[in-house]
Length: 90
Image 1 (spheres, rainbow, N blue to C red):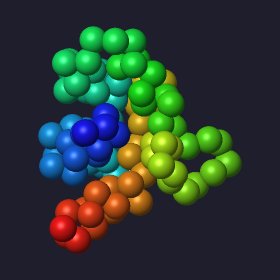
Image 2 (cartoon, rainbow, N blue to C red; image 1 turned 45 degrees about the vertical axis):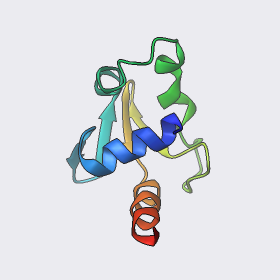
Image 3 (tube, rainbow, N blue to C red; image 1 turned 30 degrees about the horizontal axis):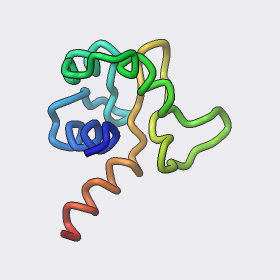
Image 4 (cartoon, helix red, strand yellow; image 1 turned 30 degrees about the vertical axis):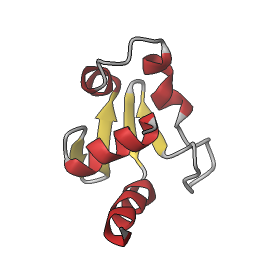
């Protein structure tokens, strides 16, 4: 299972992140604690690498987070919906 899938499944299950008026917010600190099994530097680059570029609003296969501030990310609602839809479809 890819880290993206593990990450989004944890978010949907409520195991990772916190919910506020904007949606699900995940901090780098929460991410590192949840994925403590990852021992490579990828743990530091996954969230920044998954951030939607400035000026864009749609999710892609590799971009599904919005950076709120340093170390704090909002999971795009469409990425969450895709996980939920996938579960419902089979």
